[in-house]
Length: 443
Image 1 (cartoon, rainbow, N blue to C red):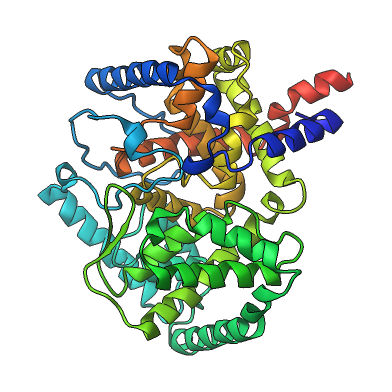
Image 2: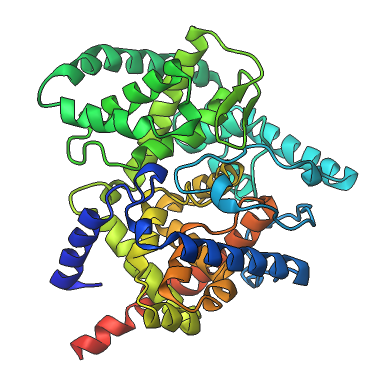
């Protein structure tokens, strides 16, 4: 995937796969006939059911002394029922809350209470030790503390406890001034195409269905960010990155839930003033995230190209059988992993799992960039057996586009994160191990 050939292939892929991850515009998946899709879906479901009943594999533990501790989390024993294609198609929402079977045991509640107290001690100190906070957050953040922890880890709130109120107020005032400065420009001819694309993408988000107030909020955030970052402007997929921040920060004021269709349910409505505060918080934290992955959204999206290439090299090194299987059936990594990099797995996982994953991403120094590639590798390896049981291109692409994660819990995310940490420990300090193919070509 190097050189001019890679660039031209990537450009062709962009043209041919525009909106590929949107349920309404799935042009790529239309090459698969209905009968083939139905048959493959049944095979995938049966395979997934058998795997669950047979027992889950245990993640390989790292021997490094600084490896984060990943707590055990209870998991429901029942297998998936019903078709995941109606529940978790690309672009469709999934439930935020855990299933009833995920209720923690008394022992787990006591452990959680102890962890929460350690978080509070760290947060409420005169100067929060961010290193300590990152160590705690790596294994997950208590839901009631997540808003302030995320704001601290995004450098939105200062480490100094006494300065937080004033800094927060100033940041929110600054965002309000951006709205006045930029948002009226959406009607100008030079800005209309970009704003139209933003509107088009947002109307596909089930989260905003029948919520014009929230739709307008997302429009303002995306348009203002794009105007302040002309090097990239708005790129499809950025809209998804607002969702975890929005749900987490909204939960400071009301209980938030998503139904099985992905529509937002609030225990009670919050007033306009509070919504304005949430909007500003989402803008600043999303801006911080995007600053860490800006190469993903500049011209030709070189960050995504490099990450997909690195993913392919990782899989070739650690699971050559899977790598050959994909190659033999003409499945290219760009065909499925582009979305993984562009949307940070938001379309592949239930939102509750995405939020747990982001706890760790924010705790990692390069969580949304370098570490994300190792997470994608671990995620793909998790389904290696099922993928190798697919015997044609159609079956592989159907599974890769609809991986059965609807019933995933924190335990599944912890397993993926443990494997990702192991891979990072093996390869991050010796990146040339992933570049041996290029070196052999030069020789």
